[in-house]
Length: 90
Image (cartoon, rainbow, N blue to C red; front, side, top):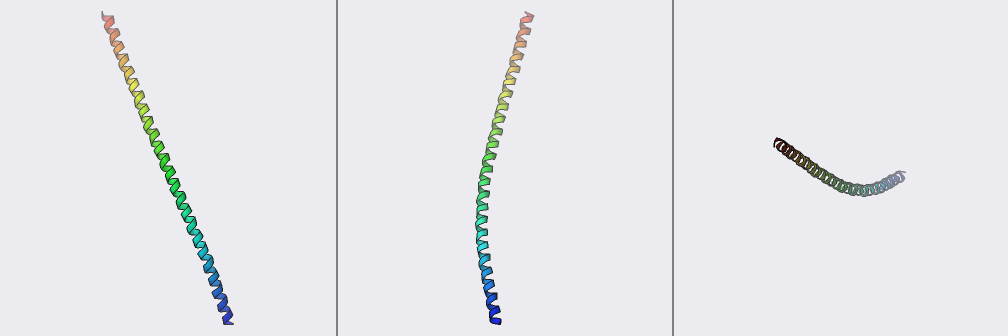
């Protein structure tokens, strides 16, 4: 009687060990896929960040250009007022 019980226990433990080993191997494959997915996501986020920084840099250059044009117009207006005052005095 004990021989049959021992055989059943050994068989159950063997089957459970095989099932757990298969689950462990599948888990390792899933974790590798998750790691690859995270690497790709990180690469995409780096590109998006770089793109955002380029846009920010370009926006700063455009703002500087517009500011320079405004200052040039202010200087031209100031010179034209000076010329009008000078012509008005003569």
